Amino acid sequence: MSSLGIVTPQSMHFKTPLRLSSGASIADYTLVYETYGTLNADRSNAVLVCHALNASHHVAGMYVGADGKKSVGWWDNMVGPGKPLDTDRFFVIGVNNLGSCFGSTGPMHPDPATGKPYGASFPVVTVEDWVRAQARLADELGIRQFAAVMGGSLGGMQALSWSMLFPDRMRHAIVIASTPKLSAQNIAFNDVARQAILTDPDFHGGDFYAHGVVPRNGLRVARMIGHITYLSDDSMAEKFARRLRNGDYQFGFGIDFEIESYLRYQGDKFSEYFDANTYLLITKALDYFDPAREHGDDLTRALAQTEARFLLVSFTTDWRFSPQRSREIVQALVNNKRKVTYAEIDAPHGHDAFLLEDPRYMNTVRAYYERIWQEIAQRRAA
Image 1: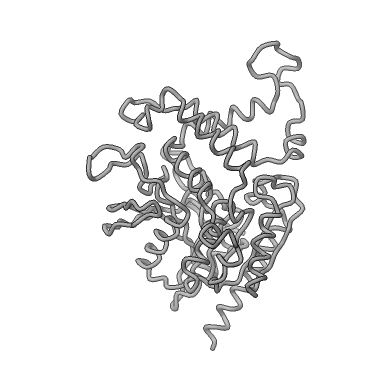
Image 2: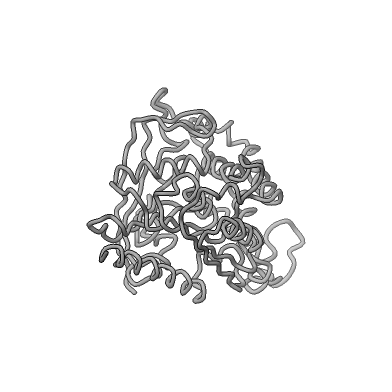
């Protein structure tokens, strides 16, 4: 398998206002995206990959960061030549969502009405808002129907939302390590993380840009909380156990254990590149996702209008988005007599397993895309 090499982002500007779920609108916004592979003549091989909380349009290949360093796309093990989502066959699109801090219009960008950064005034966005914005981008690219829409975690919510909002614009939905709605425990974790940011003295009500500061402490704690939920107890035990950093207790409140060192490192790194307002927005979008809410809390009714075929994948040690939540989606689809494939992978890595290279997981996705490719070939031959 070869690499895609350096990939150059593209951008598209939209003048027409996008009405949001909150009732607010946003106009004069830009979406940043990347594409990999070649769109075929009948535009039947396009795949949309939706990103999770702290990811971006940099799905695969190499990109040059703001610091001039080269980094690899967040799903490079999944997407590329000869990989499960094979860019020698498929035309893959990764879009950076509205409200992000990686290029698409977000809180750190100027509000056209004031010329100052949106900051806290950037409207709250939902998963459905992102999907509608992605559909506009697809329109501009001339893609009427995706061969598949795929995502993990929050990206899986977007793939599921696509199947409900635009049922005729996708043939397959690939939903990995996701959920039809957050549990109370998940909402609680998100709120604690948000409170860490909101109460940081450097947050300044969201307008910290004007003060030339960053609420780093809040971002650090938010990331540490989040990172704990991405790992399983087994994976933490294997990586860190109760190993001491300096061989003995220090009898203070600094770093004693390796796990403390690891979490603080992750928090420090995150605070260097992620925007605090973006973190608030994205975690709120996670909280608000609940498609069954408008259907009497009946997920079967919520999914009744779907037309796609589905692949769902969950991981046994993922306690944030447990297999039970994927099974709820599977059951609702079965109730609607939809074609659905479900794989529950016995993996020790927790929620982060969807980003890792478990052979059973990768082979499952590879086999599913092989089926999609055969369908495309049959459609073109007919």
